[in-house]
Image 1 (cartoon, rainbow, N blue to C red):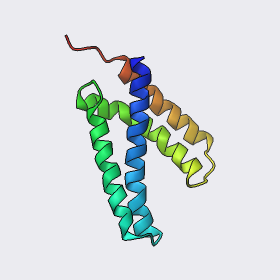
Image 2: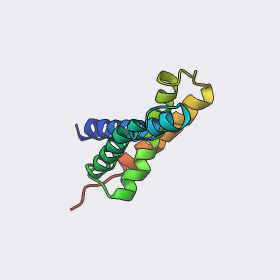
Image 3: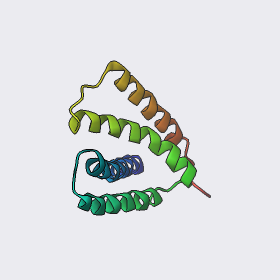
Length: 111
């Protein structure tokens, strides 16, 4: 059960970070409203808060989170940007998620 919770938390964390970075992109590059910066800041604040909810040391969380972020960013690329993913995208995401899994499965509870 903790594995499913951790994976879900990683996905929420990645979405918060991506949205927090995408909204300023819309403002700066796509002539969006400056008001996009308000939800962007809130999303990035949520991203930071979500990182604190993980049960492991911060450095380990950041390292493991990187794999989920890579996969989430590629899903964003496909769904939001409409780009077709290549075999290299899929392979890279698989390697990144595998690396994340090695880190997560290596976590040991503090005694």
